[in-house]
Image 1 (cartoon, rainbow, N blue to C red):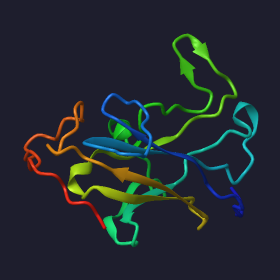
Image 2: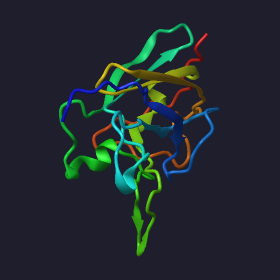
Image 3: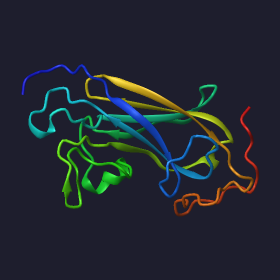
Image 4: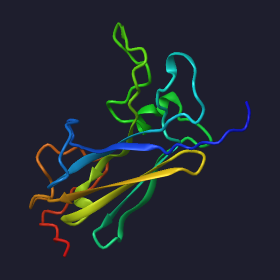
Length: 190
């Protein structure tokens, strides 16, 4: 290996919000427990020969935060993936990646899709409880980076509108030992 310079920046294709069934949701009126994912990739800094030529790779850093419209953090910066020094073990694959992720040149059943780009969906928050924050409008900001200081930011506005009971029908199950939400209407953020 020889020294090289990376000139590309990682790309964020989409910030994805899903309900408990995995269905993609609009960012309007979120309620109960949801999942936040980001679809992101990077371009290899050195050309790869053969059948993987031109195919994307995962970014080495994925971080996120949620702020209100005044810019105050309601969820401080969190790291969803950090591959700058190591990779997750196979046992932790689904703690890092979200449903719908597949590798370059994937195989589905008996079919091999040679030269097909992989899809890298990173799980930001797999079971986020919207009742933990007041009803209102928020901004999720996602940062993806490579190991060479190149970063890309993207943001998605979303609104939280929980029901009077504090829980939406069909919400994701709370983790074991979680207290039920209060049976009052959450305050609206001014």
